Image (cartoon, rainbow, N blue to C red; front, side, top):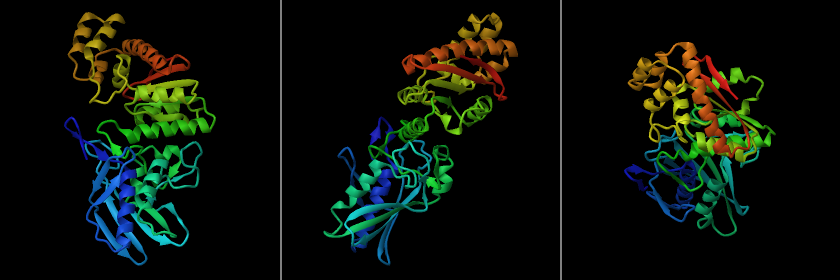
Length: 355
């Protein structure tokens, strides 16, 4: 693995699955497996040390521990295993074992009924085995993930209709620190599902709490319409517009609202700061007293600042911020969609709804 500035890059679940498959077949052929050399889609070579590799009956089995580098990834540390058997029929078939999810809804890169192993990882697995499978034979590969069903609860899989485990993902084979590649890919997948279901409205939430309140407020919308965008405001809005959404609704709390209204395309703490000076300026333009404006400038957090305001004043300030966020949304979407912003209090009450 390499480094981005001072941060280590890591490997995707797809790379780990492909490496495990290669290690399993090498083991089946009687080789001792202490390292696995794997060519990544971009042409670079990954050198991976397996956790274990052993022969069992007529199959080879190899396990790899996913190292996501310095990316805060829910699958970091997951044990991804492959079991490989040689079969008489030529070709390489790929199955999902325990801990790998199954696709149940249309609109994803993999059709319903298939294991959630995306196209690039599938090709990586085939490429990893192609030079090892004897002429005239084929291989059957089963990928599994220890504890994958529990890990999946921390991902977007349940809302995408992927059940029973995690997805095997990756387009480059490498996880770039703080790019959250897998999360952004899941956002894209969510819009693939929405488009396939013929939906034209999406609600983008910054977290589960804001989404819960948004679900109650927009109760007529189907479950698939609610997309957890996390910190990726600009990316999610562009993906929504690119997938033909005609209405994009942002649901958030004041903290994220301040960042978005202030121009942040990504609200992750490593990418944008809470600008209390900006918030104080907006409060001043809304008519908040000078003494309170000064207190806001010295607040510890946005939540702290909100506690300084009377409820009606807080609603007025949030309405002005929401109007600014709505303009940001429109700009990111290219101006071709309707937009709304729902702002929630930290007690999960609606502070404002701007259309």
